Amino acid sequence: MSTAADLLRADLREFAGYKSARSDRITGDVWLNANESAWANEGDAGGACRRYPEPQPLALCQRLAELYDVAPDQLLVGRGSDEAIDVLVRAFCVPGQGAIVTAPPVFGMYAVCARLHGVRVVEVPLIDTAAGLISDIDAMAEAAVANGASLVFVCSPGNPSGELVGMASIVRLLQRLQNRAIVVVDEAYVEYAPQSSLASLVSEHDNLVILRTMSKAHALASARIGVAIAQPELIAMIRRCQAPYPLPGPAVVLALQALEPAALAATAAHVEEAKTERGRVQAALETMAGVGRVYPSAGNFLLVRFGDAEGAYRALLASGVVVRDMRAMPQLDNALRITIGSPEDNQRMLAALRPAEDLAA
Ligand SMILES: Cc1ncc(COP(=O)(O)O)c(C=O)c1O
Image 1 (cartoon, rainbow, N blue to C red):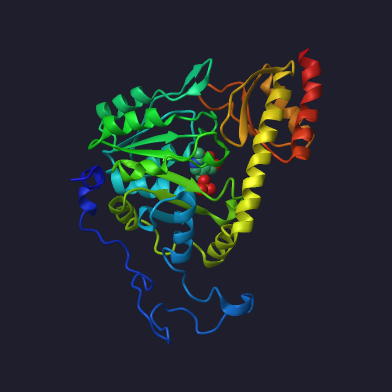
Image 2: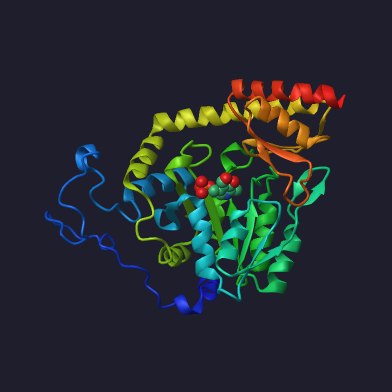
């Protein structure tokens, strides 16, 4: 039996999920099976929104499969990678009994979805080292085994740590947890990283799920397009736990336009520009007196420790520059996370910090 089949909640083994009016690929001219209105909305020019959308839009799945170099049946599209995290927890964790492993202070949605589902969150904190804030992969594996966790979330590139977990570490984790737990590698920011996606490992490892999103590099955060990549059997399992129509039709149209060659080329150029800016901003911050540490980052953001984080945060806000205050997060009591903006945005951010620097000097 595969790891996923072993770990799927026993009460969901025979569960088919909701069968919607669009579940079967039937054909016809007169559609009277979904209680849709016979008339288009006045505000919907062309009436594109009158019908429910395809549950898994074929064209979008094919284009994303090409982009990520996987087979279409290895992929599930949904309402942002947030939805994928949620359906994974719902499919593989028994409420009141299950557990997940996460590495605080990484992205909070893993713990949020687990808590909402009544599932224990086993924390293996990142370790602050000279190389950056890094995941203790072996401790995560042991924590999963010791606590019977069915999901282990690895955020790579890490938000907010910026950490990139190497392929060898992920393979070691997959091998250790084979038949024991599913490893979810959240690659929301991988386009900005020096290492490419680990999606090619999916074919060899039945306990690997890769998460991708169009919210970051593709600049479609509002369209809410996220992707889970795994072996077809696991994809079919989580699909049964998903909302009937996760993707709104207009969002799918937008995503398809964003996957046209010219748009992809522009996206690649923007990613390169963000990477260049990341280096420039990092260098500028490192010369500032009030800056304690700028962590290396494989994402489109920098995690920065300040001598006076409160002063820096206020100085930025006073100039209209909004960054993410990380001070409530474990280990980050003097840190802000700064997204890499346009060159002009970044100049404003750096200029806003200079008076705070003078105060610190
Ligand atoms: C690491 C990570 N994963 C997932 C997400 C959620 O992305 P989406 O917009 O696809 O739901 C975010 C959003 O900030 C993120 O930082």
